[in-house]
Image (cartoon, rainbow, N blue to C red; front, top):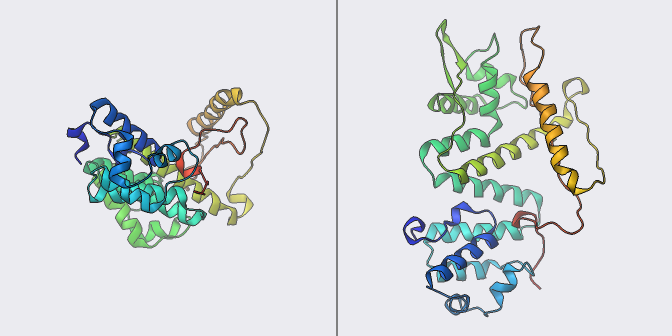
Length: 293
């Protein structure tokens, strides 16, 4: 289905299958093309099944996802993506959910223009960011082996070589006019053509860096700073706390002392997220765990 022509939403713009199905049905209603009951008949499902799924009473089954995707007239790629969203929502293991989340983000990036796709790949892998920042160091060399040996954790030189190619394609690095044998970061910024890809890429970036934070527990105390608290607060205070954390991050990064030449790249990150909320939050599909009876 060509969503741009038909006026129906593209499944690739979603990570919550319920949100996509709601919007798809709303487009049907707006066009007067198909009712929920008519869709149920096409999918050979009870008319009550989809409303119960959309109300969050239980997760859609994979078989039902296949049936509804076919009934909706989705093409093969779109059907596969809708089924992937359903599988991700149903997956219980953290490892499985993480693998599926990465696949969702990659498929979304594959549906967009080349530069947006490359920007997504840039943010999806911490090595790209580390190499770009490392080339700003006074003694940095654009040598994959030299850079790979200094990455934390270690990575193969081939991975760094691919990062250098990507950074050059994006014009994020360029030869130093004063020393052509050296490459330095440019002032080029991140600019996406599609906001949906921007959002997906930002999610991928935070996932990648949070994984690096988890791995940093194995480093010595002198190489990291990990501290956190779990506190009971009013949700009304969340905007205030977010603003204070952003101000702290800006202060740390914008006013970092530079008396000594830089010789390392560190990632500074702040986080604030809920562990419990009353009344319950309206969670995205990725954070729901209910099963169909």
